[in-house]
Length: 596
Ligand SMILES: Nc1ncnc2c1ncn2[C@@H]1O[C@H](COP(=O)(O)OP(=O)(O)OP(=O)(O)O)[C@@H](O)[C@H]1O
Image (cartoon, rainbow, N blue to C red; front, side, top):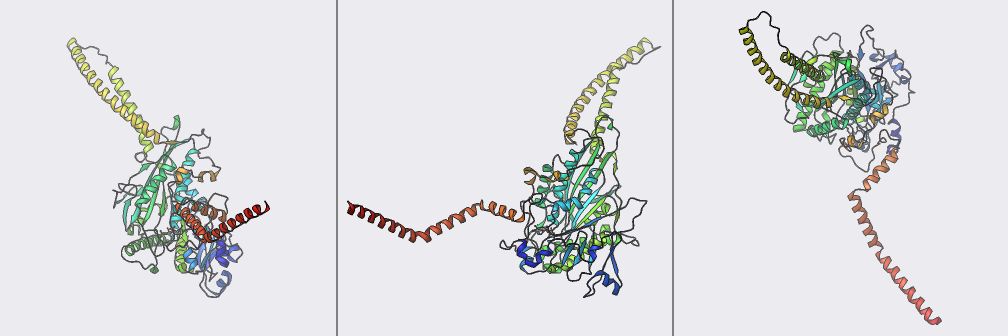
């Protein structure tokens, strides 16, 4: 529990904004890094040394073009039981809502769009760092969210989460369906795919046969050939596919994480939408892709891995290094070549990073002193990423890539063909100035033609019935709101919270408690924030958890054993008691007899 952490616990939450730098959150302020020992404030450090500007909150914007920067946030996880047991100190902490500061050298500070302290819930992270990307994707703007950080820093906790704290992926899926429900004037078609990049090989997590897939390129960008895509009908349906895909993901035990992700995963939600109603024919269809990426964690030399783990680690580090290089080059105006092709990861992220769509980078860090250097590297990476400029534009497509359009076109062309057939059968040409033989010949030809057309019509009718059956089945895949049509196209949607509430069926597809740090000890309590979305306190939650544990068979057996031990211990006393009662009874009988 938090109180167990003693004096350290005050640093677990975001610090109150009372330090010199924290009061300088105006948009024109710049933060700087100096590593001079003994300096107490950025102001003094800048006076004595040449400042190296790290991040300006007022990055000059190109006013004419609607350029947005990548949203960069930093999320701290709490110290793990192992870190607490080893007596590790806090090396980095959240100073207010936007600054990360070094405990030992307060002049080292970085500013981001938002910094989340260790007690921040994933739902809050979602609302700040992800919701705008999901709502953009539902309106036709491509979106990419990725969790970056060293091994065991909390990436999978952030992206996938568990039943206690659903991650960004389940929250996004849930939100997408809620947005459909709240947009009655459009119809949607959602498809999902789930890929992993393991040792520089792309595998399909929704199709175990889809191994070592090729990355191809077309006018729209890079894509993976032969990926299985599933049309999804509900949040539970999508979550069940993710859960099935997770079964195939490469995970393994490392020194730092019992269940460490050994691959990068890319969950893609493809969203098509078109206006509903009679006048919608010919209207453009919006097509967008939402990529939710859980990166494998980089490993330091401290990892001491061998064999398979070392090989995996070197692939992971190499691809993350390439990602870092690509990001550096993207932010360097002089760079002429961006090495996207140096890794599968950067190749797949090429269109997201090169300026199309919204991007949110969530950098996960641990506050612990033993990972101080790795955390610093993550912070520098995050800082560089902030300078990438992107241009988020709505995608209007492109018939052949749209399933909705394909179905609509199929119906239209079928109807036209049928009309033509009908006209061919009933129309008899007017013959003027023709001889009797000619008329007989033409009549014969017409009869033949009519017969042929008749049989063709029958075939067409059969084909049409089959096609209509297919269209009816496909129509069911098109998602529409059950609400009455609203006037505005994408109205403001109140009640954000409501979207996050998960039903029993949906929760069943999330892991109960995803993973535990290696060597976690039950006797040492990790600070656990209360169940997200509930009003319970931590103590209530822990009590509830203890109560749940009591229901286990093991606990029942333990109770039985205790009861038996107690009976055995007290048996001699019970015998004495029994003897005493007997003596008393005999005495009472004797007294009664004497009184008679
Ligand atoms: N914000 C948090 N609050 C509470 N516990 C957390 C938080 N973030 C991470 N953890 C816990 O820390 C451990 C490691 O987290 P996680 O597995 O998500 O790390 P990771 O970065 O995905 O690691 P890897 O790269 O090795 O897969 C888990 O036990 C997880 O439950």
